Length: 221
Image 1: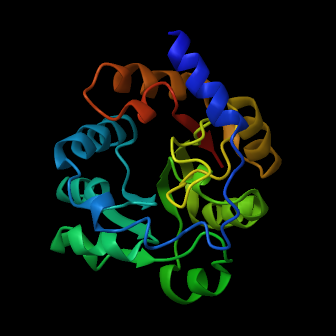
Image 2: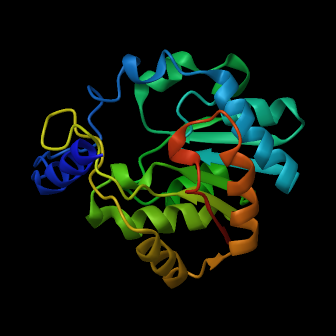
């Protein structure tokens, strides 16, 4: 317990590395994606399916594309967005053609109207926001808002990663739940607490990544 507290304090006090490009492709390499367990993503995706029964869906920061791939198998018109080159080497072929390679740090206005051209009943955006520097927050949220037809399912870590201060650092903008709720509200998103609680209660009992447990916030637009 004491060691854990010391580690957290030391991590908080360590200066963030001054990387020009926080989305370094040498960090988000094949090692990041080649060992991911499809079954874990399937369990999460099944919760999405059971709660929302969406007609269409998009996962922003979809990594290997396992969530949209599973939902597509359930008859959902599912898509993904991913920024890491390496992730595409480990995507199921059934979904790869429906995953856009985009960078959240730059406006998607032109891409939306030329290529995507639609909003989605459910947008998933989990454990991505903390990877971008604070100066990109507003652009990032505007990009997400463009795609939301009804519900946004998201999480935004409040923790620095263990590699803070090194070339392997991945988290550059952790935020508290209170901050995230206020920020999303300022963009017109309405927090759905009962629905969020329902989602988290189901996820908590499943064998999925710890960063999903008790961290999901659901908004309506």
